[in-house]
Image 1 (cartoon, rainbow, N blue to C red):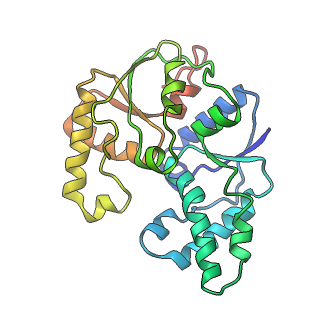
Image 2: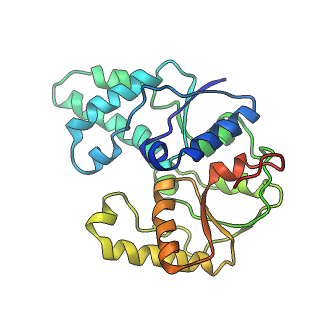
Length: 251
């Protein structure tokens, strides 16, 4: 199976190890992974800030870059939700405004084959046991886009539960937002910080060593809060846990 990795802006700029982890994991499962160098931002930040028309060329470019692959995988629930939920809306709005159906037609083939990592593993590859080893106590935070937008449900937990050596503990208030929300954290800094503090205090109460999530933007916010509160926990992306083995353990 030939899969393209859509790394996303945040991961490419700040968390490239997450992308490397995705490639190691999928290669271990026999999947050929390409990284199209022409990929750019999916336009989520622009769209969410109200620049809908400015997002359209970015969506069209995404479709051109990834159209020839069997599947597109991204280690980001928010960017996967942008493609799957909001790209069709972009295409329909363009058509409704009399600007033709070319955008909708361009997006139609790529939208349904774009997957968040746990969707690709569980739904497409049909695996939950991926040969991972991670001897730590872990609690899992389901991010808003993954939980509500994509409906990831138990997929991440099933993958974590199958990791050798990993003790998974439930996070109190797991379904509550961490407070990041992209520009929400900038426009509502005090509320965002308070929500982040609640999330970290709940995570601390589990006694876990690691807080895991499937979106580095949320982990960035939570990790910053952990640093300010001087906790002993670490934020770790799910892909890095699943890529970890006895022979090549995660840092």
